[in-house]
Length: 325
Image: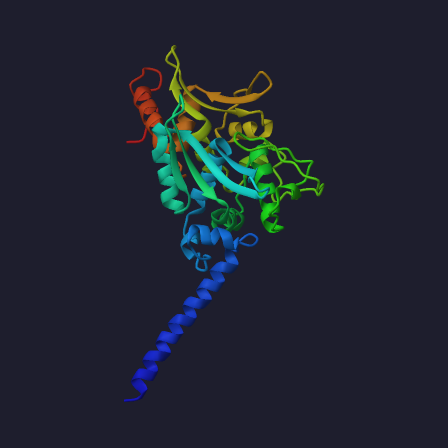
């Protein structure tokens, strides 16, 4: 009879041991970047995340999609506090009407806070992810999946943030003086140190290198949320467009993915624009967003896409294309 409780205890201990090693294995797969500030934990009234397996269950397609959104509408803000310390946060800022997009991202990540700003001429909402969440979850997820930002500005911001976190820098003047990132709300960076910031992921050298990235197509979906448009011109041409700051190889890669020879336009030497409207090109766009199994469009961009499809279905030029049911 005495063996029964012994066996029961052994099973419990076995389960606890298995759970412990699962937590350890997960922590090794998703290690925290640098040291989490004790003050940050006290301020947030929380503990270090020891068990991160729920974050590893987030699909890599979503992480790639998120990177595309951040490359378009996000920024990593690195600023000085009033006492001279460093504060780091990731911000995604969009029009208030599209708040459902931020709520969706937050619901999947279970990170950050959505804030509303109504006192602007164009009301906005922002998803703000703090330093601790970046170093415990989001940045480790990017590294784990080998996913990285594809625009020069966002990549530079990420490299600098990683440099600060890994070297456990806390004082703003420790940031190399050679750097001066001014991205939206971010203040210019100053300091006396001249140490070069290492690049964790080298950007592809050619358009085909971009197109062959395992995460590129899901990244395009996220980038479309931020920088894409589906519309019909006055001459009834259906059009899909992507537009952002000049990045020649990246935009040439769009041509490869969407299998077109359309020339990339450059506006005032500042912006690249990829745009297609032929029947063959529009079918390729529909195939990409409706039939390829990538992360779906969400929020207002998805509504815009669905309305666009409806107009195309009813047009004499595009009506015989293959549309989703």
